[in-house]
Length: 340
Image (cartoon, rainbow, N blue to C red; front, side):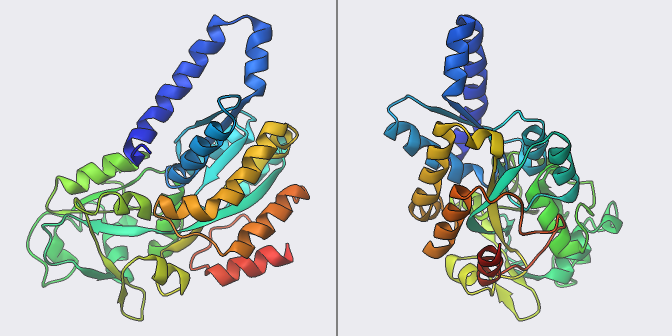
């Protein structure tokens, strides 16, 4: 299996190649081909899971169905999804009210399917010997809008930290990870300083932190897990002592408030196509194995069973109210899904 970085790069190439294929074939052939192409876009965090599922599904179909997976961020993905340009949207947070309204205006309904849990990970360079743990309050001090141009050295965060420049790396504004982190740490979604290196491509952030001794950044757990030799995770203290991200701390709810469910959304129009229905069912049945393989935390089996039931019964809508939420534990999510 390709690395996360190679897959993300390949996603853009695949999309370009697909366009070229359409341009070179007669209209009736292009139409037939498009009926057998499933278009996914959205979160770079969910990308490794969806790409792994897409690889296995395409193998099982022996090339009869093509799945393209883009990485334009959760927000960017929903924009395309609510315009009817994609069949499935990868999302590292639930759909927001403005996105719900955009989909409603375009007469696009959707099924919301949780596929895994992620431990949003705070990272420093391995040469950093001082910041092995940080409190949520310290992270807020660094990332809040008021810190822009003012909190620029490590010793401004904690007096025992060195007098060294603080170099920050994080997701761009279209990222669901950016939305979730700012809500959880700063207290308001999208409330963040702007003077940091931002990218929708998590691999850019990996390289930035790996090459900068004074760096600090955050993104999804899978990108950290694949690059442990280049990065060092910071234990986050949410009020009960510092906790490092892991399967166990996500499952037992102690990695709080930076644990979160991640999703795929499937449009009602796409669900009418047999190949999309088959792909989503394959996704939910394969998720327990493939989620773990790409270093995320699988949901309990019953969660996938419930999601599959919702999908097969065309249970449209969201169990969230269109607002950002933080600190949702796995059992809380299961309770909502059971009542949906």
